[in-house]
Every structure is written in C-alpha cells, then in structure tokens.
Image (cartoon, rainbow, N blue to C red; front, top):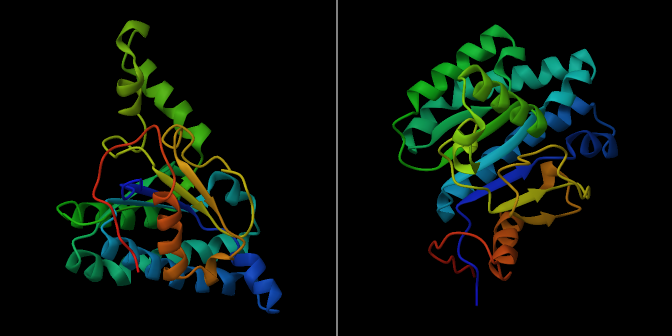
Length: 237
C-alpha cells in the first residue's frame, strides 16, 4: 500500500561548494548555480501539489564561513526576493522565513518582512526558507518565549510548545531530502521532523533535478509509515 503524498517536505541543499570545486570554479559560483536549481525544485513542488516546502538555505554555523562567501549568499538572497516576488505572487506562493532574523543584515530583514507580507494571502505552496537557522536554537528560543509569557509547566504540552516554534501553524515534516552524500540532519527541523522519512542522495545540489525530486517522493510513497496524515496519493509516470 502506497503512502500518501507528503504534505511537508524539507530539503537540506548541500554540495554547492563541492560542485564548484570539482569544476575548478569559485565556491560562490556553486551557490549561484544552486540558487537556479532552487527555482526548479520550487516549481516542481508546486506542480505536484506539495503544501509546504522548507529549504535549508543558511544555517547558524554558516556565519563562520569566509566573509566573501557569506556576502555572496546574502546578495543572492536579496536578488532572489527582490526579482522573483512578482512570480511568487502570480503563482499564489506564500513566503515565510524561519530562523534568527536578527542576525541577518537589516536590509535583508526588511526584504524578508516585505515579501512575507506581500505573499501572505497566497493559497498555493507555502515556501519556507530556513535562514540563520538551527534546530536547537529554535527550541531554545521557544523555551524563552514560554518563560517570558509566564507559562507554567502544567500549561505546556507538545501542541502548545509547537506553537512557540518558528514553524507554528505548519504541518509536521513528512520527508527530509539531503543532497551531496552526507547522511545527517545537521540541526535541521529537529522537533518538526521527529517522524519524518529521510532520503539521502549522492547528487550535489546544483545537479539535483526535478526528476530526482519526484523520485524521492515516489520512494517516500513506497514506504509504510506508522505516523502521518492522510493526503491524496501522487501517481508518477
């Protein structure tokens, strides 16, 4: 019996730097190619009917990378949000960010807030970008929210705690995909992905195609899950 279509897919987009190095290119070129690939996967997710797609774009640990590389990543983010907003609106995509936005440059914070507001009425795919994000950090920030609101232990349960996380209101993650051959979560959606199915591939992110994305969904559907929600099944050729 096939498992139903995942409602929420998380993607750890890994391998941009290695992709560039294998071709004798600067690491920043790998990030540029990776950004182009991201658009293809977003389009595929929307075509299939995925409700939520969460992309791990920039972790808290990434702040420790060379200054030039970090600056390029911020420029790519700014460029994408300022140039692709019309397309997002036209397709009904709703944009949302998770992570510690206070660590981001002020102009990036503004662009993110504007994009979230402008796409808030979208009824299609919810595109979540994890920026300056760490799963442990998210949980710690949620605990701090609970303490600051004076919540007592008796008032706290899993559902209530979930509403304090950055992903409040979103369904749990059903499938987590990681590219580049690494087989770990790297601090990504630790709470939300407690029962997620995992799909690992050797493919580097800039080479991760729509076809492999759909194959990952098929692989997910072939698994028998004991947890999850009932959603329509996807039949792929």
